[in-house]
Image (cartoon, rainbow, N blue to C red; front, side):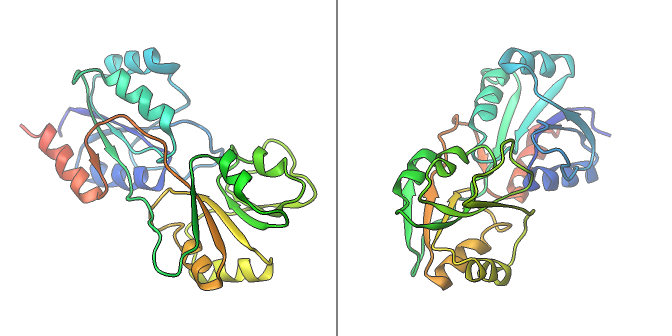
Length: 247
């Protein structure tokens, strides 16, 4: 069995799939989960939970554990973790590859407003909007602060603070279907969808449903991440990993 150790920065569906393929091929994998989700779906292989203690903590971990290659499979919006990985891996001392799904793009019939942050997204919503909010539990405050907005905030886990009376928290986990997303929008009179441009198929159904129902979309753009080799296909990433580690 190959002895080269691979650290996957996971916590995503993509990270689980990458771990499954690499473990099946006999690679020595450990997946790091930040612990942000209390009941995560666990990948194959060895696991590590919790933070590293910043760049220096991650750098020490890579050295102490003999990590040869890091695969950054974090969420496209996990900019801080990607930045820490870049700094900790150094100038080629530890190889770093990143998997990142292709971003969604607006098509015919879509009504999108592109914004750069959750704060900006909240500011562009018209008064009286009834919103399906799918930004996650960390970006709720700008929306909850507006008493003239209402809607459904959907997330995997309960937020730290109770929502105001004009909002309802819906706990649910993807993937979702177009039919279920249309039904959710129709039954709740949704006028606007606010989401992050995470890409991928697991949550794309909401965009199709919004197009079919004429629901306006406020799309939060991805943050800029360090310049490293990036792969949008798991297959291409696996080929790159094998190319790096093979004799």
